[in-house]
Image 1 (tube, rainbow, N blue to C red):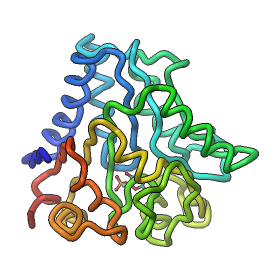
Image 2 (tube, protein in one colour):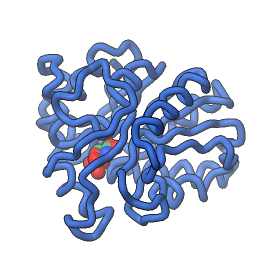
Image 3 (tube, rainbow, N blue to C red):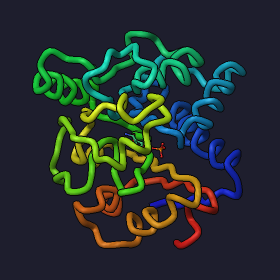
Length: 241
Ligand code: GLP
């Protein structure tokens, strides 16, 4: 595990963006999995700027989103698709046909999970998957006690997760109760993982995830079993490591 602890938010955002930039330089047709949430916002902004300055070319890159809320239109401003559309797709030269998403309103939930599992396989797997971490250790929408062998699946969101995501929807009653997410096995099958966490409120869970027991009770603890993980933290998130 490669651990980077950055002095401030700006350096933290930059370090995340550089990992992506370096991968694309090495492999212009990389398949990249994308997390949403507050944590990577600044990193996506930097990628937009780098693309504008022509330092990074996304024209052969393929993206897949990590997770999505269920039971809302994809155009809902709180959806992960809207988030990535606003922060990345409209800022870099990704080709529309290379942008893949979990559907937030599929007719058949199980079929949607199968479609996405097959898609990940058909694309040859994920070269780099970007992850945030929930305060309870969730990865994507894999809440505590999700089996480590889970593939793309429907998830019940905990009250804590719904509260943490009020910012996306404006009020708690608008935050969906279900989501769909790559499973822990899809995450672990990715060739490289990048975990991002910033701020004091993430310090305890970062310690548990990286130094604690590997257990399904702390989904992110599974990362200790992956052989190519980059962890990017700011000082606050890394303060008890
Ligand atoms: C959310 C998302 C995850 C995200 C995580 C951390 O619930 N489903 O994809 O990585 O929680 O979010 P944040 O970065 O806002 O703390």
